[in-house]
Image (tube, rainbow, N blue to C red; front, side):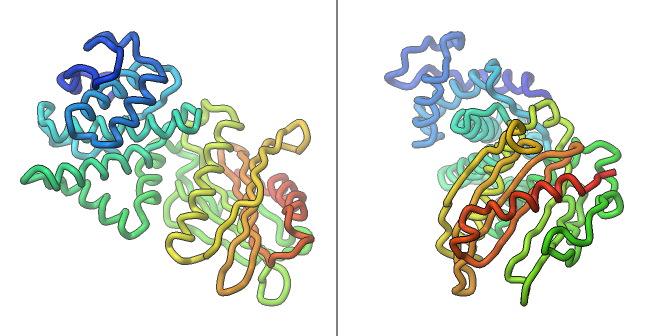
Length: 337
């Protein structure tokens, strides 16, 4: 299903601009970022009232034409479309919600990179409102999304849906048989490989040192979807770093770690380092122990490579520099066939 074709479904939403918006009822040529920012604020207040629907139409019209918005609409991510009547207002509202959530994410980040997670989160918000205000609203596919969200598994599920169809035949082959890696790197000894059951999730390699392996790191390797390969390395790295940072705060919300504090974020350029990368250093607490956690992310051979190191908190390791050389050596020595 193409993005452009959905524009026709939503024409009936053009019921006029919200109050205070200087835009003609159908003149979408005047829609710019400032207007869309106001529309997003209004839409988030109440997506279903008259002003919210007008704001949603403005957001949609902007997304259908703007060069700084990239949205790959696929039926797996908007599953109610398969059986919905095109004139069904519930279906229309949910489509607008998907677009609005995605547009908000891209404009906030300042990057034209598709964000299905944000789109689906807005869909579920609007779906909840529709269920509370209308009788008979029940979409099994979205009920599954709601259940996965409550279990903390929605993002992983969406990753599978949005990535798997875009993997090359080579990327679908199990990574554990296609990756060469060192048995030892610096003071760290290889401990084992974790697989995740799906090619889009890749593998992770664990290395540890010291008694009880209180100081360890995991190296994650997983494919970059084909549709993302058109973006430059810096855009891919920065976007994916934000996802990795979100994972850490999600672990805190789940109670797995406590007292997370971001100490440093740094973009590492290829001019100064061997390759471009992103680094984040976090303080946290787990099992009453104060720890540092450092995240590095780069790309290599159509794959993301992410290193996450956890180690006891002390002044010598506060800046995470001791892991930079480890990260560079691992990226150079890991070979993906």
